Structure formats: structure tokens, C-alpha cells
Image 1 (tube, rainbow, N blue to C red):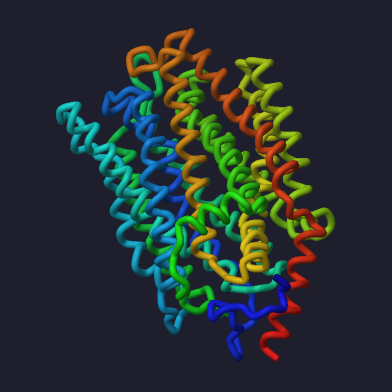
Image 2 (cartoon, rainbow, N blue to C red; image 1 turned 45 degrees about the vertical axis):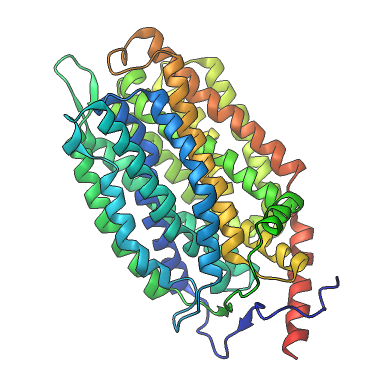
Length: 475
């Protein structure tokens, strides 16, 4: 069907006199992902370490729990996407009111992830609490706030340059969150035992989780008050069809490409950061190196932030992501081959390996709005929440795969709280820290290049088609 045909009542309408898009929106949107990462990263980096070293649960079981929880997310993510799309817009907008509703629950759920008060409970109860708290946190509370937050970007502005800018500022906020959890927190939550081994302090980690929870709520409120939804999206009234949803996923190459790419990129990023809680204190014997490595990632991300919008305009978001990730892949495989004990050599190759992660992270949120635009052209229906829920679900699978694979591979190399510093085990920790992200980075390059169809020319063509249609429809 031609794009000039009639769209249903879900078509986006521009508000009469919206406030101009500007710095207030950018900073506000950045605060939203700063809040997201205060909870997301503390789980990705420390939860596996907490349950293996403090609660005495095997790494394999923790990893399997994280993978199995995604079965629940398959239902809760799509349900939340439908709730968002079918919610009645308020004066503030359609998406931002969810930030007020869910900021408190996600803060509480974050604290419950690290139950230091249950360390002396029976093992069966510890396993039950691990499953219960992780599902409450990820499948209910994080889903309930992240999907409307991510969907809100397409309502803040319809301009692709503004959206790329929002994506960059979102990444700035996320990077600050990574810095708080990955740079500052390790210096606070690890300590040296008399035998020289660096171990995790469960009490300090719990205090850190409480501090992150309070900061998180403040950041979500900042996002709510500073962002303006200019593109008014009506309540979705079309009857939900699971068959149609699955069909759109199967037949939409752009959606398949972006969700698989994001899944693989997250495996690359989170396996690097997740194994950091093991390789730096156990292999290198230097917990400060954990903070330095995380800070290197922050510096690299900030270094590319001023240039990513122009690079995207000149070469395309897909193109710069593929090239930078190819460089990262080579660097990570080289790091595995070197098997270095020199922390400075490690930092050099680690920094190069982070370039692809940084660039894709800066543009991926703009890429999902490109996918939503392409989906609207194809279906004549705007479903930001539903599309974003699918995207969010696959990102969660990426998180679970990173933690799950790390947990399973730690068990394979023989890691436990009693073998944590054995020579063979720490060598195995080094190997999996390099190989898991190297293989996933290579898979990311192949998927994004061969499967994802929205290159620079295709995005420009879709934006032009939607502008012509909307102008025609308004007239």
C-alpha cells in the first residue's frame, strides 16, 4: 500500500505550539538513562559476584537463573509495550507519566537484589530469594520504566538529527551511570584480606545499592520535568494480535537486525564489565584496575560524543558502527592471543576494543527510531511502545547471555569461592574475559552488515516519505 493512503487514528499528530527542542530536553533525557544504568549496571557487574562469593551459590546456577528469567520477560515486555501504547495521553504526554509511577518500585527492587540480611539463611531460601528478587527487579520494575522511557524519544522530536542528538545524550547519561557504578563503587565495595586476596564486602555493596536507589529516583524525576513530548501519539485502539506481532518480527528485517545487533553488542559490553569483578581482583590482583578500565570506557565514549552526529550524517549510523566494531573485534582477539600479565598492555588493547561498543551505544537509540519509522511506513500504524518492548526484550536477552555465559564458563574453568585464586582458574578467567566479547563482537559485525537494511540512503528515504505523508495528511 502507498504511504499516502489513509492511516488509522493512531497516526502521530504534531502539537500546535510545542516548546522548541533544546538543551533542556537533552539533559533531561540523559538523566533518564543515568537512572537506568544506576540499577542496570550494578546488577550486571555485581550480582553474579555477590551470589557466588557471598551467598555461596554456584556461578552456573546464577547464570542459568538469569537466562531462564528471560522466558518471563518475553511476556512482561510485550505486555508493558501494549500498556504504554494503549494508555491515554495525559497533559504531560503519553510516556513520561510512567516515570513517576515506576521510579519508586524500581528503586526498592534494586535494594532487594543484594539481601545481605539473608547470608545465614538455608541455601534453598537463598536460591528462592535470588529468583524472586531478580524477576521482580528485571521482569516487572525495570520493564515498567525502561520501555516507556525508551519509547519517549520518538515523541520528543520527529527530526532525525534531534533523535541522533537524544541518542548521544542518552549515552552520556548512561556513561555517567556506568562511571558511578563501575569506577567509584569498586573502590568502595572491595577490600584486601590479611592473605593479600581482594574480596567483596557485602555490607558495602548493600549500602552502595541504597545510595544508587536514591540517586535513581532523583534522576527519573529530572527526566520527567525536563523533557517535552512534542509529537502527540494517540491511544492505540486496534485489537492486539500476537500472531500479527510475531509475523511483523519475522518479516521485518530492520527490526530483526537491530534487536540481534543490540543483543550481541550487550554481550560484548557486559561480558567485559561483568568479568571485571573477577579478572581484576583475581587475575591481576589489582581492584583499582577495575575502576581504571571502566573509566577508560567512559573517556572513549565521551571522546566520540561530539563527533557522532556529524559522522552519522556523513557516513551513516550503520556504516560507522560496523567499521568501529571490526577494529574492536581484532583488538579483543589479539588480547586473548597475548595472554598478558602486564596491566598497561591490557589497558591499551581494552581501550581499542571498547571503540566499537562506544560508537554503537551512541547511535543505537537513534537507530531504533529509524526502525519504528520504517515499521510505520510498512504497517501504517505507529507502535512505539510495542516495537520498543521487543527491542528491550532482546537487550535483556543480551544482558542475560552475558551474565549466563560468564557464570557457566566460570563453572567450566572451575571457579568457586574456594578456588577463586587457583592459578588454573585465574588463567581461565582471563581466557573467557577475552573470548566471549571477541566472538560476540565478530557476530555483531556480521549481523549488522548483512541483515540490518537501514543504511544512510534508506534512512533518508524513509524520513522524506513520512514527512510528505504527514504534510499531506494534515492538509
